[in-house]
Length: 261
Image 1 (tube, rainbow, N blue to C red):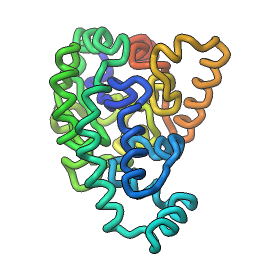
Image 2 (image 1 turned 90 degrees about the vertical axis):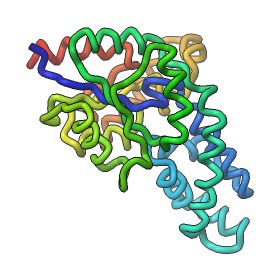
Image 3 (image 1 turned 135 degrees about the vertical axis):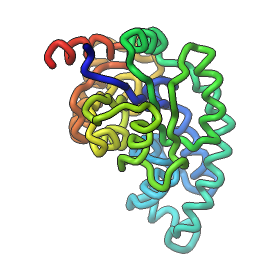
Image 4 (image 1 turned 180 degrees about the vertical axis):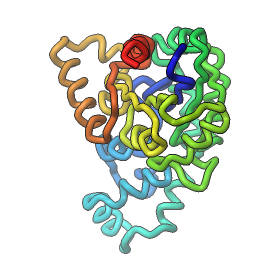
């Protein structure tokens, strides 16, 4: 008998959008719309959080905060954050479909988990209006989770546990230790930990590596190892229980965990 009842996956960087490019590019463009040149590193730093929180976190950094005040003549306000967010969401809606390709091996992995009787849930830092563009494209590729809890579905998103609590209800999966949360970012890992779940981080498909499958495959082994180590350190700092390269490696990890249980 399996110990686990369900697995809850993040979307961008974990199940789709290898390298997590869609949100990163849109954050840069949204800031540029307001006369602010954000770097790729600045756009990636808070990845995984609900998108308004992401914008707020970016603007709380000393450089971007000072740049906003220089360009606009006043410190950033909540109203300013709202204005950027209102630009960001429709921009992301327009481009997200271009980045909806499943991570290699993801569809096969889901089929294996379903064959074990596991329920499949999902949470995301995206809004529902963005995810509505993704659902049919993911389904065409063989991925249709049993639920999706979006950042704007509940009063509070990551890194708190509310989205995971909704997954427990939707999936009828409890206690928390029988649910695995899989994510490529620290806020997503913290979300799982806050809910009392086993957490698994993905190191090479997500935000920390930030490469396409082709770019990753072209690297020498030592460069891949360095990227893996960098992502692992960041995920470990959030308290993750286990780290794998991509979701394709999850069935083997679950086999190991079940054997040890």
